[in-house]
Structure formats: C-alpha cells, structure tokens
Length: 406
Image (cartoon, rainbow, N blue to C red; front, top):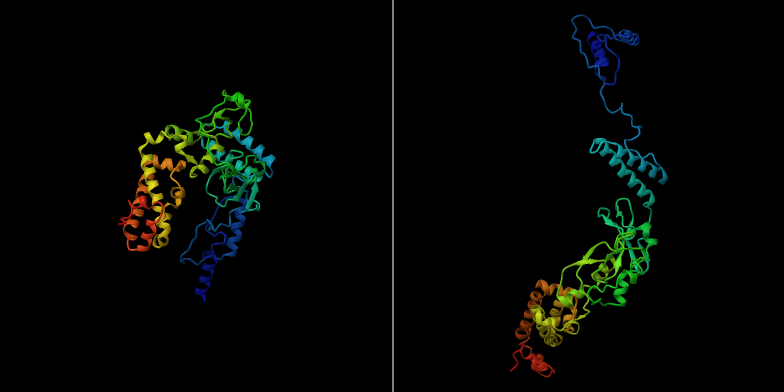
C-alpha cells in the first residue's frame, strides 16, 4: 500500500506536462509567489527521508497553446477600399525615400509597396465570372486560362498579372488586354484587313512627313513631335508614317518592299498594327516577282533554281492526278504547306523568300522533286494504261523527260 501511494504521488506531480504546480524545492522571493509555494506544499506531502526525489524542469511543454492565433498577421492590408489603398501606397513611397538606401528596412518597405499595388489592382479588376468569348470590332476574344505567363496589355500598356487578373486574347490578330480594357478598345481586328485587302505596301518606307499627319499619331491621333513633346514620334518602316509610343513599341519585322527590291532581310522597327499585319500575311502568296522585279532572278541564284524546280513539279502534277497509286499515297500533300507551288510558278509569299534566303526552301523543294521523279520513273512503269493516257496529254512531249516512254 505504501508503494502504491508513493507511485500515485509521483505520477500526479511529475508525469503531467500541463501541471503547473510548483514543487517544494522551488523557493523564490516575492509575496505572491510565497503564497503559491505554501499552497503547493500543502497540496503535496513531503517524501520520506532517503526517498529519491524526481524533479521536472520548471518550463512548461510548449505545444502551441501559448501562441496568439488571433493576432493580426504581419503585413496585413488595413485598407479596405481603393482610396485607402492609394493613400497607403503614397505613404509607403514616402517612407521608402526617407529610409537609408539599401537598408533592410527599405527593402521591407519596397516589398510592402508591391503588395499594396497588387491589392489595388485586384480591387480594380475583381476576379469575377467573365464570359469565355467576347466579340468586339471584329475581334474574337477568348478568355485566357494561363496564370503563369506574364503578358503586356495592348490597350493600357501595363503588365497583365495572370494570377489575379482576367485577360483575353483575340484569336485573329493575337491582341491581348485586361478584361477591364475590353470596352475601351478602338482598334479593329487586323485579320479583317487581311481577309478583305491582302496586299503589301511595296514602296520602301513611303514617308510623307509629320505635317501630312497634322503632327498626330497615324493610328490613335494623339499629338506627337520629333522632340518628344508631348509624345515621341516613332516612324514605322513599313508604312512610313509616324506613331506615338503607345501604338509603336519598336517591334522588329522584315519589310516586304525591301526584300523584293533590294533582297534585304534586315528587321526594322514597325508599329504594333504593322507588326500584326505582317505576321498574318507572311505565308500568303501575294507577290508576283516577275511583275514586281523581274531583274531579281538575274542576281539571286537561289530564285532561279527554285523557279526551275517549281516548273518541273507543275509538269509532274498530271501524272499524280491520273495515277491511282500516287493519289493513294497522297504525294501532292508533300507540298501542303505551300499549296501554291502545285498551282503556279509565279506567286511567292514572304515566307518563301525568307526560306529561299536561308537555303531551306531550295533543299526541301529538291527533296520533293526527287521523290516525285522517282515515282514517275519507277513506280508508274508497270501501269501501261497510265502511260498510254499520258501519251495523249497535251504536255506529253514535255513529260517524257520524267518518264521513259518508248
């Protein structure tokens, strides 16, 4: 019984981590603590002499109970509306200017300024349910779902924060903007111009002067000047006109007029509208080089070789239309990316000329020519009926160079 009593007292005093009662060995000064010690000594009987004394540390086990979970988090935004946030941003800017440069306090203030600005932008552009498709000025806008890609709004020229802002992209001309900027757009979709009037300006930088534009941007009509007051005038090398900094971002593009006249492929600065138009037109075969600059074939050897290969492919085309195996193998689909190559030998796109300049077009066209000729000379040989039909074609005499007809 005596052993059980001692074990019970030991468990009561030493094994409960939440027991904050003080032991008889703890003597500290102070009237309040003396009273606590007296109460503790009365509650706990002393151990007999010679009995081992198990002492636990004075500290209480910290299981998170002492933490104030209702305290205000560090950096909490006290501002609840746009006006208060703007005032907080101004105050934060002033604090940053007053703090020592490159100090830790200044860095913390800059971080807080960034958070305040993001909060302000979030209040301006709430992440509410927006329609997935919007049609404005022939633009067909689709709501973007990407949250990690950082883009620039083509309307307000500020960064689109995908994590907290809703934004749209036109599937026709790739115009990007915030959802709050959609109703402010005044520029029609460039793809409509490509559909209705697919042609290039073939005069090299046709400048008329700022006076012809009344010293205003050619697109948005904002006042501009070469001195930069009130806004800098930037010239587009494609149209020759001047634009403001909102309509001309110094984008670079290859100018078709310089290519067909000078065989010059150096990118030059163009306006945003010209850049989109040239990007949409790059694969359209609208350049008839024999009419625009017939002397170009005398100085560019690559074009001469490409023209010869295209003429040969046009002569091979009747074989493939007549041959069942060629139709089954869909050989003509080898040129599906350049469909105009099996229709005529005169029209070129800017992409054709770019690939001809780099040598890519000549190599790929030579491989296709070899594949077509192999099919005509070898694979079509057993088909006597086809050969007889080819003899009766108007171009039969010309086709003999690809097919050994006796």
